[in-house]
Length: 113
Length: 112
Image: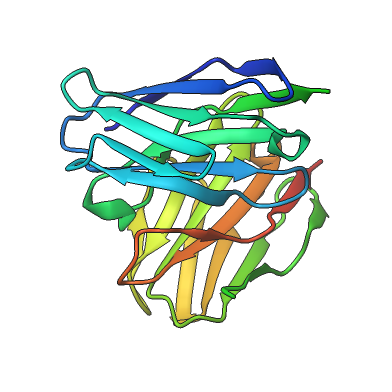
C-alpha cells in the first residue's frame, strides 16, 4: 500500500518568515495530494490540495508543489502569522481520496513572535 | 457549511466492553470514513463506506467493525475494547463531486 513520509516533525520559524514542509510518497499511482491543518481540539481541515496533472498551486500565502518523478510534494507558507501555528498533515491517495487518504505523521509548526 | 458531528468528545470504557462511536453528516455525502489518530503516527484509515450498507476495510481494520444503515450516519464499533484501542477517533465525509474530506471534531477514547 501507499506510504507517506513527512518532514520535519517540528518546525519553528519567526513570524513573517517562510515555512516549508516536505512529503514523499511511495505509490506512483497516487494522483491526489491534500494538505490538512489541525488546530488544538479540532478535526483536520483542508487548506490546499493538488492533483497529479498539476505541478504547482497557490492560494494567497500558501502554495504546494508536486514533483511526480521524484514522488515528493511540499507545502510552502510565506509571511507566517501566529494563527499559522498548528499541526499540518500531508496525504496521498488514488481515485481522489474516494478510498480514503494515507497521511504523513504530521508537522507541528510553531510561529515565534 | 458542512457539518460532521461525533456523538462524544470524550469517552472512557473498560477492557472488554462493546463500544459504539457515532458519526453524522448533514450534507448527503456518500463517502464516509473512520480514522484513528495517535501521537507520532498521524491518521490511519480504519474503515470507509461508499454508500448505505456498503463498507470497505482500510489499513487497520482489526478489532473494529462498522455499520451504515442510513446515508447520514456511520458508526464505528469496537466489539471488545482493548487498551491498545485508546486513541483519538476521527470521522470524515466526502461529497461525490469534490475530493475534500470534512472531518468531525473527534472522540478521544480511553480504554482502561
